Every structure is written in C-alpha cells, then in structure tokens.
Image (cartoon, rainbow, N blue to C red):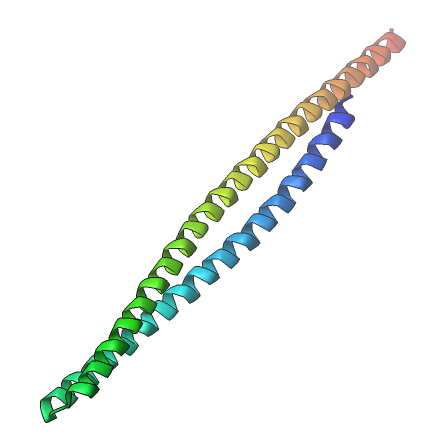
Length: 148
C-alpha cells in the first residue's frame, strides 16, 4: 500500500515537474515578446525624436508649407505607430503577468508534491526503523533465553 501511494506521488511529481518546465518556457517566451515589443517602442520614440530634431533644424533655416505639411503627416502616422506599439507592449506585459502566475502556481503544486513525498519517505523510514528495532529486540530476547 505504501509503495503504491508512493508511486502515485512520484508520478504526480513527474507530471508537476513537466508542468513547471512548460510554464517556465512559456514565461520566458512571453518575456522575450514583451522585451522585443518594448525595444521596438523605444526605437520608434527615438526615431520620432530624430525626426523632430530634423524638423526643428529645417524650421530654423526655413521651410516651405508643403514640406512642413509632409512632416506633420509623417508625425501623425509615426504617432499612430507609437500608440499601436504601446498597445502591443501593454498586451505583452499582461501576457507576462498571466504566464508568471501560471508558473508560480505550477511551482506551488510541485513543492506540494515534494512535501508529500518527503513526508511519505519519513513515515516509511519510521516504519522501517520500528521493524528493525522490533527484530533487534526479538533477537536480543532469543539470545538471552538461550543463555539461561
């Protein structure tokens, strides 16, 4: 009976270990997506700042209305791209949070099985020690009987 329940615990522990591995991989993937999205967002912001600097230089030396309108249209599209990328970043960060929670839950489950296995091992060891003590006591009793 003890061995059967221990086998079940070991099997559940192995399943939990695989779940932790899968959750770890999913979290790492989500974190990479979020990091890549943030880098792209930062790049767009830097790109915008560079173009803003170009606009300011062009305005300082003089620029016609058509060129100014082109800059304005470009900034409008760039701002839309930045806003869209910010949405991507926010979605990616939410996914990281979801995957982190799943990973933490799988870790808790794994630790629970580890605790149960440790308790089972301790109980099994206690039973074995009692058996050994009983055998030792019986052996000592037999020897003392034979000496009389």
